[in-house]
Amino acid sequence: MSYPVSSSAVVKLNFRRAVFLTSASKLSQCPPDEGREVAFAGRSNAGKSSAINSLTSNKKLARTSKTPGRTQLINFFQIGDKQRLVDLPGYGFAKVPQAIKNEWNRQLEIYLRQRASLRGLILLMDIRHPMQIFDQQMLDWFLLAQMPVHILLTKSDKLKRGPAKSALLKLQDQLSSKSELVSAQLFSSLKHTGHEELSTVLTTWLCEPRTEGDSAASSAGHSPVGNAPK
Ligand code: GDP
Image 1 (tube, rainbow, N blue to C red):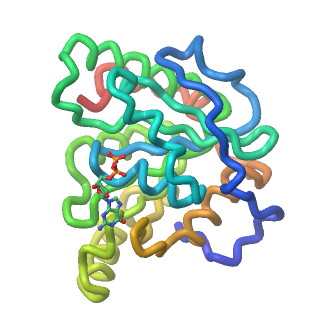
Image 2: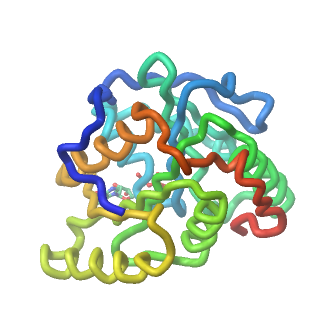
């Protein structure tokens, strides 16, 4: 699937309006499950905070998730009236004890499975190390639930233009056999590249009416129990 930059999305969301809404460590603490939201996930250090900050032109926005002891929380940012971005915890925090990781996996799974307002996943991967085990699990998990996934190959400035393009083509080739629901692009917070494409995807998911055949994880009836990324 590809998202042309000049999408038919009726409104262009103003991501600069994003403000921190709340943090949640379990589903019951999440904001009311209404409107629409898009989650951002990735291994820690993949460039997730930088991407959110860069998209919203707010250097401090995603810092909340970096506060020591708060890394287990899902952070919600309000954009429009009923639209939210959701910052899932970076994966691979070495310092978090296993028991807490297990509990977190459980809560994450409940969130992803039950959250009706969730419209899709932005999955961030460092362009130099794409499709690690966690990434593949997250991807498979979402696709199983018939949820769209858009991959950002982050820090694309770390590679020259040719190799960066090749990395994207290689990934797109890999993905083509998986599902129509997955797409990918290059992204660099540092160089501000790929923002328009990302904005188009987000606007489409957050604003456009659902098409027939769309289904949320909650309605797909697939339970990823036992398969949560470790
Ligand atoms: P997170 O753990 O996924 O939230 O990752 P961060 O956003 O904190 O970024 C991890 C590291 O990668 C930091 O040192 C960032 O400065 C760096 N980084 C993030 N985005 C980019 C980028 O687009 N280009 C380059 N060169 N470095 C980046």
